[in-house]
Length: 199
Image 1 (cartoon, rainbow, N blue to C red):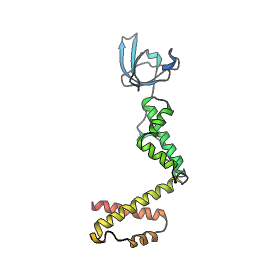
Image 2: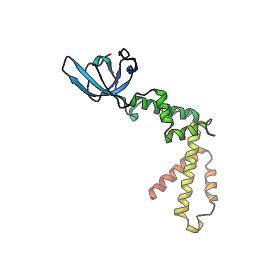
Image 3: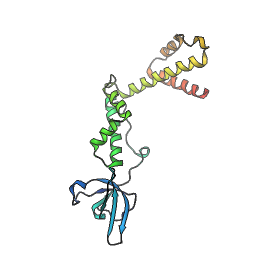
Image 4: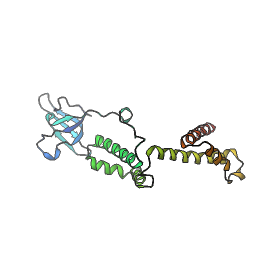
């Protein structure tokens, strides 16, 4: 369906029947409308910085995408492996980049993968945890971080400075007595919450 009423700021796609094949399916944003009621030219800016003029009949409006917090996408599934979780996250980020810029998906995936966060995710996907269930891996990371923070908290607040280098055998005994990872994670999360109240 062609564009009937162009508006500045509207996201548009060049129609599949445009006379210049290289411009077909390009996505851009309307930056100006020129002419009278009978003959209107629409200026479109593309992600690469180019500006082109089109007839409204050559363009199709793209519905505005919802912000990420309003989308009803499923979250990362806990039954996925770490590798599958990473692939899903990178794919979702690449799709969002495609929506914003209109570039091809393969290029967007490459751009997302080459960011610092993308490199860290790729390293995770290729690492020793790649075959673990995402839920178990996330719980173990949470547990490790909570244990580190708790040990630091105890060392810096609860004990005198000279005792800060001692091994806290009582902490290990306490954590072992809690049994499974979920119980320990919940206990450590509550301790962190209490620690954050102390400042």
